[in-house]
Length: 208
Image (cartoon, rainbow, N blue to C red):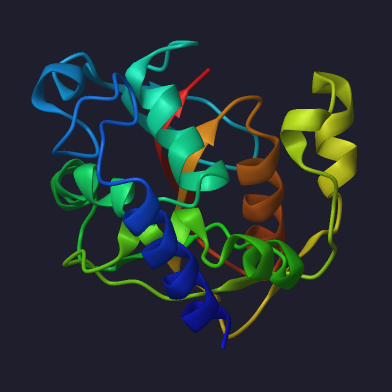
């Protein structure tokens, strides 16, 4: 039912507002070639508590094309924008991790996912040729991290996640859109490690 409502909402938006670049507004593509060329791949490895490391694929700049693309996905509900990044996500996964690693999207609380109509992190994994499984649920409906000061972000998420299924001895790669303070990924990793996960890594579009 939720996905049907999301599809209807998306169809109405498409009829009212034909495809335009989410960055410059040019007609035709959701991210035009000129704007996509401004998204620079950096493949930066950044540290985060409880994780072995986090791969940040692109340079993330305030007001930049990547930021506009992420906002279009999350707040304008244009989930199709995710498709522009799946190839690079798949490349990072296949080039850096063996077959015994499993990708998992950072979960949304059911209320947030119902409001948006989809989980933006899961959209980044859609149709990617790599092992994946949903190992986590978000059991607490927390305030959006973007609304909080840096010091409050970790406490906001404490015990917000729960493990579903057996993760003992598993190597897990968490997928999310943007890593700011790393609080979300760290709390997910802590939850997984306490349940017996062997290694936890992260892959995000950008860091900043």
